[in-house]
Length: 290
Image 1 (tube, rainbow, N blue to C red):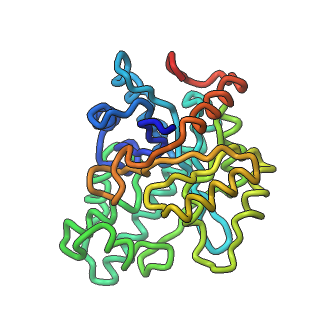
Image 2 (cartoon, rainbow, N blue to C red; image 1 turned 135 degrees about the vertical axis):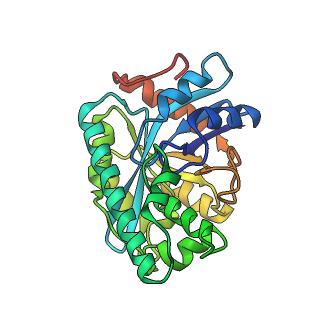
Image 3 (cartoon, one colour; image 1 turned 135 degrees about the horizontal axis):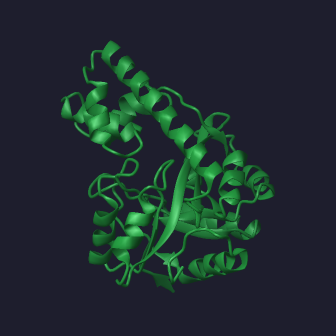
């Protein structure tokens, strides 16, 4: 059985195109019954989304997405059921967001040196109140006529190996898992198929190490994952007794190929997540059906 749910979605609190209320409205329009708000380095969209969804059929789970460093790649860690009021957690999120601003400024400088004239002020305007991210730089490149799409901006300039890429402060994957756990959250490895382009990279030893750090789930039913990739990841989840989760990684209508709620996620996965949440009973924020 599957449910109309999406456990990976972003708002204007980070680099999404829709406000928390707008995301909730779209989820309701599409018939979703469960939505996780998982902004980059921010939980600012969680409470507004919960408030807007109150009294509707839509249940909203609090979440976050953290970027971490590994050798030859980058790992994203999702945290579900985190407590937005946890002080240490928010202090680290603030540090991560400030590092994003410095990176965006450096990227703009590199792009200008390459003849792609955009302003950092415009990038900040695009980001609004959200955490500045590469998608905002990409949008500025599109507006400036330097590329046709955000995808082209990443492919040509902003990817990890691109000429305008700049690094920023990141946690290790293990540190991110611990941080999420201390905030009462469930650490889940996001889109593992994109961890590394190294053909020698092996997912199982990596997952084993994260399991020792408290990893609870792995994102198997992800946006553009093929049936073959999904099946392989489900096998990994089963092997390490992890919960197979999933979502669209939605950033806004038309931003990526997969739209909100376009991934089927087994009801059993949601039941296991609810059971974990019930057992943990952290003091974190929750709504009546969480």
